[in-house]
Length: 95
Image 1 (cartoon, rainbow, N blue to C red):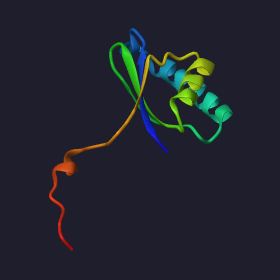
Image 2: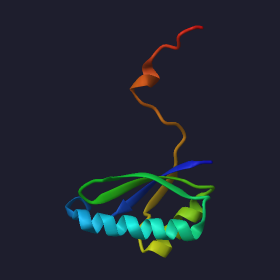
Image 3: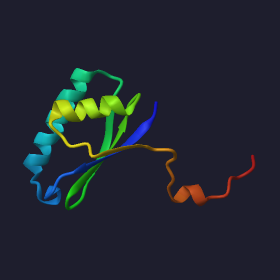
Image 4: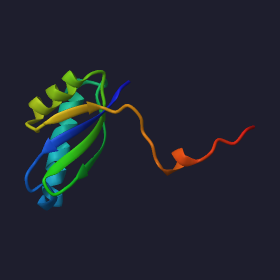
């Protein structure tokens, strides 16, 4: 199933309290449960004025529906083509 990066413009996001972030997370989980198992939230990153979320979903439409139902912005949804990390630089060992 495709993985997506969602960019959410949210001025002041970095100043949200733990309680506010908990409330956003609870609302997101509620909407996800209503939409069914085809959409999953993996992780989010909070910056000063944005929240970046990683989701697994069949297509961007269900992500936009999640945003609409939850009252969240979804300013940009981009399918992730590849995931790399420091281990990507390692040379494969022949077995």
